[in-house]
Image (cartoon, rainbow, N blue to C red; front, side, top):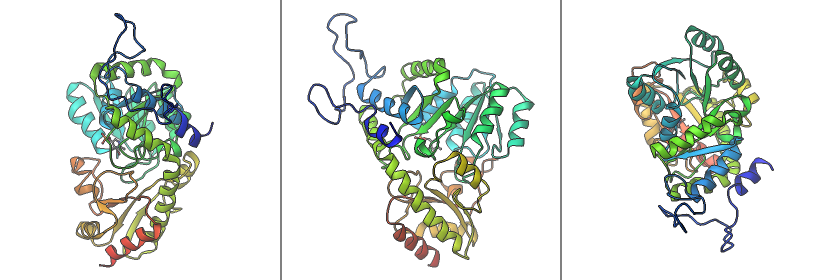
Length: 379
Ligand SMILES: *Cc1c(COP(=O)(O)O)cnc(C)c1O
């Protein structure tokens, strides 16, 4: 079956006892046993819950892996994946990785014994250097990156990592499996903040990891971590993310077309210094994105002229674009990363230009979004 069909049906069999088309949300912590050890596969909801299993089934299907493991947030999923490493192991991060990932690696796991390095992975020569300078156990890729929307060549990066004996993790939050399936390019593990496009409605926080079929022991280990470390999502959260998945295909198609309209409008304005959108011919990663993605996504970054003060003014003046962190919901959001989402990386190599504005382009009418940006820029 194709993506759109699997998104709706996988993990969503009608309830056998009542015929309910939508399986019930199993709000239960425990399960009755007929005699000691005789149960229906469920003993305790940290270990397994039917609503979570349904979500994991759908996520695995969409990313193309045999197994997905759901967590209570993207960061909980990342923590579990990073703890596959041992003290002394080297983790190589892209140099504009999600700020929370950098913070976790440097402020939590480096003191614990991890050896953390960064490099610009959109530059394959720099990646080759970083991999050959020291043995690396894990390569952590984001593409498109946040908020600069750089594109990393997944196939080449996975080949280099495989030659160097490093496992590859791809944070696929920005692209979603509708636009990009890293396991097909050779990644070992895909991680998600399901809080963003997969949930899609800004009403739930969640995360997940999906493992390649050739890495079954890693999947086993992550499943063990889910229960042993306990960062599990509640049943209602699982239901919300799963419901979001069912409309992912139609939502992403509109996120992409709206973002393109917005990016082209911004590109036409004289008072905008730079527009970053992988769908624009002017974008350094445009051709690579066209090769490895099925669309260019819903995120657009731009720099108005006038410096950080003007950027802050524009972000405060939009009416339809809400000034807020996060992304991937049906409603459009605007933010200034240097002062908001990326404040924790100020002064580090991950710092972003202070006049950069990031848009999460939602599903409103594209013309209304353009009108809103026009009035905010003209004010
Ligand atoms: C939001 C985000 C995360 C963290 O996920 P949470 O659900 O907020 O814990 C990780 N990676 C990327 C790319 C994100 O956008």
